[in-house]
Amino acid sequence: MDFFVYLPIAVNSVPILLLLGLGGLVGFLSGLFGVGGGWLLTPLLIMIGIPPTVATASDSAQIVGASSSGTYAHYRMGNVDFKMGLFLLVGGLIGGSFGVHLVKVLRALGNADLVINVTYVAMLGIIGVYMFMESLGNLKKTPRVEVPLASGQQKTPSLYARFMLRLPWRVNFEKSGVEISLLLPLILGGFVGLLAAIMGVGGGFVMVPIMVYLLRMPMHVVVGTSLFQIFFTCVNVAIQQAYVNHTVDFILALFLLIGSSIFAQVGARINKRLKGDQIKILLAVIILVVMVRMLSGLILPPSLLLSYSGGH
Amino acid sequence: MKRSGYFGLGFLPLLCMGIGVLGGEAWGQAAYLGVEIIEPTQIEVGSFFHGRDIKVRAICPGDCQLALRILGPREDLTLMRKARVGGIWMNVEQVTFANIPKVYLLWTSGKPSGDGGRSLKELKFDYSSVVADCLRGQTQEQNHFLIQELVKLKEHDNLYNISEGTIRTRPLEKGFFSQAEALLHLPAKIYPGSYSLELIAFKEGKSTLLRSYPLKVQLAGLPAALSRLANENGLLYGLLAVGIAVLCGLVMGIFFSSRGGH
Image (cartoon, rainbow over the protein chains, first blue to last red):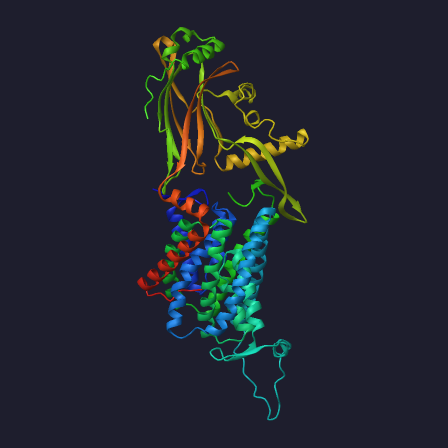
């Protein structure tokens, strides 16, 4: 027997088990792959009939809950670079606020759903292909042997490293062991905040590669600091979505949160039994499947040629 | 709610006129006609609402068919029209449909569309009659296309529906009258508001409205409180939502000794 729950903001009724299952699926992947899962949850919610604007806003509220326990745990273990996190956060707040108002303008123009879908397809496509190729390469290649440099010979810094060195207002981030311009975390945090508002995601799958590849932070600090930044960014986005757009469905967020919290534990246990690149390839395949599904929605003729503007 | 003996003085002339138009033999027996039961007349949309069945029992002229119709409040509805631009399907313009019912649900005892839909049109039961003249400034071809798409959207949401042959009837009193029974399903997506339930007799392409009853749909309990708070005090709603989410996350994290993901 199906038990339904009525979602007053989405103006729809959805089976409780389906919501717990979707939350559980995302939580399972979160535990297995170490990402938040908002990027997967929003399209799934849209597929079951939740208006896109409500799906993205409610996702943010769900991510607030999901990331709160993780942030606290990493804070206790000393894995959070607060200085870096603060600059990322300031950028994230600015980017998130701008994103919320951008969604409002796009809703008035009737293009919010298109922008959300196109942004999704682009982000999922780029990240999915990159991860797949990188993991496939890692699984195929033999371990690399480092050739020591001859005495007196110096390694030439990359173009990106030279660009970073030229930027003003350099700050030393002791915890991460890097000295970079404070403009970098501000701009990159703003970019992730903008994505969080438009796509309803915490930004973990963008923030982690940015911290590792662009900010050159050590992995153990990346996870804690990313969570810290994502938590506060999503708090801001969720409150602003509720205040400006009235699109946060708390009942929806709560059921997803319960499902994701429980199944994250199962995913984490399976994670320990798999190799890193096996996990990354699996994740890349899932990302690409979701991307293809959304892309087909943009290219193939829709069954309905009229739609509600800005959700219900 | 029972409506036994719903035969007020105002109802009689209306009913007599209706039966007169249809030329039924039940003319002199009009006092026996009408709805015996509508249950319920007030629908509460609570936390576990998933649509609702309304039980209706009515007495109608024996030589007529019966229709029950639920009409929602009329509104001007602005929708986005999708078209292909540069290979991508996107919203290209706003289309406003004037004075259309939010909900149009029809149940009949017979199958008026059996003759290719001609009778439905004659009886003004078809969608085109209900949303007639809702578009201005378009060609007839465009109007027809857009109304078709509007009906598809509304049918997709289960807000417009025509269910033929779903009212059961059985003859009473030597065939002068019939007792009709139906279970009318209201969809989960129904909007809170005031609706009317109409009892219509029809025969040979002619119809008459016997009576219209009010039907109220309203949010109740937690959905009502949340909807009110979200719309009247969005900031407080947002703060509460975030606060409860953090609390739930922490409690779940402690319960499962979770380190969480990101």
